[in-house]
Length: 305
Image (tube, rainbow, N blue to C red; front, side, top):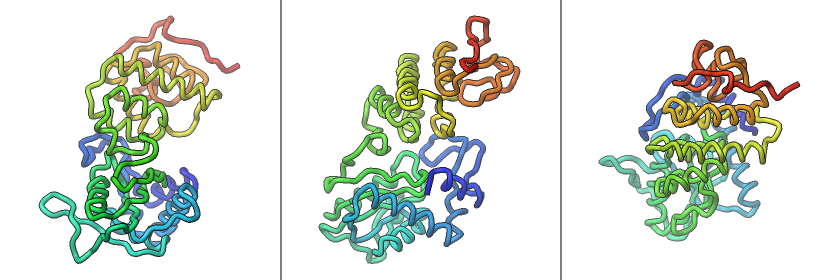
């Protein structure tokens, strides 16, 4: 199953909402996955969770084996159940007690047992980390983490000590401990994953930080998408809007990025291209960058014939 198919399933069930949302983590977003609206349809839930498991097996190998699935209540329970069904193993869950996730109902994690942690959606990974800690504290092993709403993306394997073994770009709960410059480098290494941008939204960024981000994104586009990139930017789009609104990005940086992204840049008063920094993001009568006025020198002709 491809990324766009997963997104379409969320749209078809009205589970992908648009607007302004303050997430449980304190982050703000213009989109929100209300996974319960999708998970109310068992056949769709079964299909998507089976696709996540198929991706997990493809990434971790045909000999990948686990003993059980564990999820945080409440939203992760149906995801864990369907992931357990696809894997052919039992599914248990942790639930809140005095504000902290705990294991109840005679559920057990035995030493040496291998678990998949399954969740519906995450922003910074706090609940997932709590579940990882529950498993490892009892001598269990977290073999993988899967998240339904992250377009079926599988988070990296976890070592017996609880430390992720793969890319930091896939590990929101590790990014909190990194200095800002390293979080930026993680973000530009895999710009379409949300975790670095969501972490950076929580921090006070400087003009120098923004320059590092823009230079890194320019390098990503030139290296991996020299002809331009036309797919949705998702969380990155929202983050770049915030940089512009905070006046951390200048016209030159924005134009360079838009040219690399679309292959052209148009008049700041009536631009027709879409994407971060463009006039239509803020309305036709507003400038290319929020808070600035377009001038002849700040506009460049289309690079397309």
